[in-house]
Image (tube, rainbow, N blue to C red):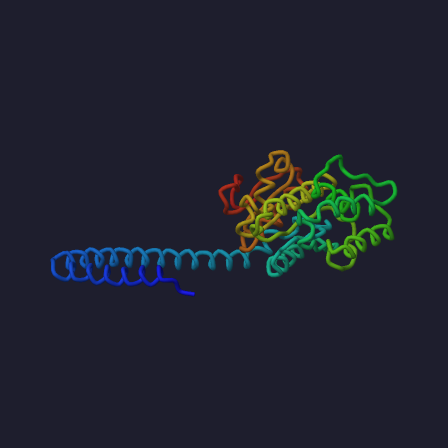
Length: 306
């Protein structure tokens, strides 16, 4: 219900507006004020036009860069991973990024051994205790988890037995049971079991939204780091925003212990970034690691050396 006080305030506001209008109309203030406002509007309009032109120029440059990378990408990576196998782990990755990177692995000579698609539940703090308990329950006989308490390292250690050829392998039946258990609990999307591989590519999206985004990003970053420690090498690649504090790449780069051996790429939504992801896999085989992309934390440049 509208109160008497509301009526009084409304009437006072009307009379105040009328009074101001009379004062401004009866003096030269209105002309000067309108002139100043008009000049400011023209200035802002000019700034908008300049920024629009800059944005359009950047967009054209980005398209040209992507087209160039699409044309020379297969040649740039040709044969670099000849005879090697690569397993893919996805977490919030865009299908277009995934498909584009997979298309480059063929010319590189790599065989994609399979994919594990993690769900958002893996990074949900409310389900962290359940996931940690599940890793112990699903651990195959004779296998060991890393000496860590965080969810990402434990899940990475569990999946290493399925994904990484040089780690302690589990029997196919046990691997199937492990993935089925994670899938039944909603942590992994149903799918075929990947074959053990030489390298692992962990593909993510951008910054993870929400108040728990940083925690979720930390799970993926540490999972990738553990897969890297377990085998021949791993690359963590995300799109724009992934190098932020709530992105998996950003969390990884904030920890020198992780970036000492794990390669990261922060612009996999671009043609050059997708080429960088494949070049970074080659880098891992050579025992090197780096931080690549367009973010300020990409300390080693836009792309790895071929």
